[in-house]
Structures are given as structure tokens and as C-alpha cells.
Length: 57
Ligand code: SF4
Image 1 (cartoon, rainbow, N blue to C red):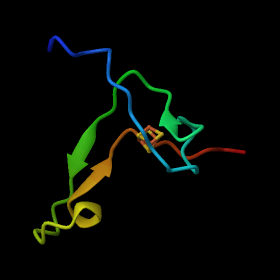
Image 2 (cartoon, helix red, strand yellow):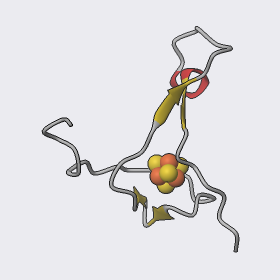
Image 3 (tube, rainbow, N blue to C red):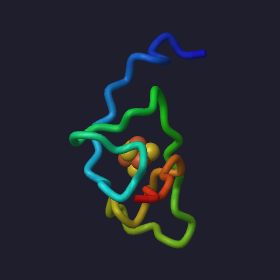
């Protein structure tokens, strides 16, 4: 394990995710994935949060 495991502060503005609260992610860690159909260097095309879980309410 990395020495920084468990101390990350994850800012997020995805309010439709059930792990979102007050501009932050409530998880201790997340998995970020690479999008496979883009190679343009634009962040929103290249990466995504694989820990996203749709808010049910
Ligand atoms: S799991 Fe991902 S999308 Fe959901 S609040 Fe955390 S960082 Fe944001």
C-alpha cells in the first residue's frame, strides 16, 4: 500500500452520485479510470470516476 492511502481529500461536484456531500467525496478512496475511446488530452474525455454510484433519491 502507498503511504498516502487513507488521507486523500477528494473534491467532487457530481451531485448525482450517492457518495457526494458538500462538494466532497465521502469515500476514503476512489478508482479513476481511463476512457478508451479518446486520446485528445481533454480531461473530461480522458478520465472518469469508476466509483460513481447513482443517488437513488
Ligand atoms: S465516487 Fe466519484 S463521482 Fe462519486 S462523489 Fe466520489 S469522486 Fe465524486
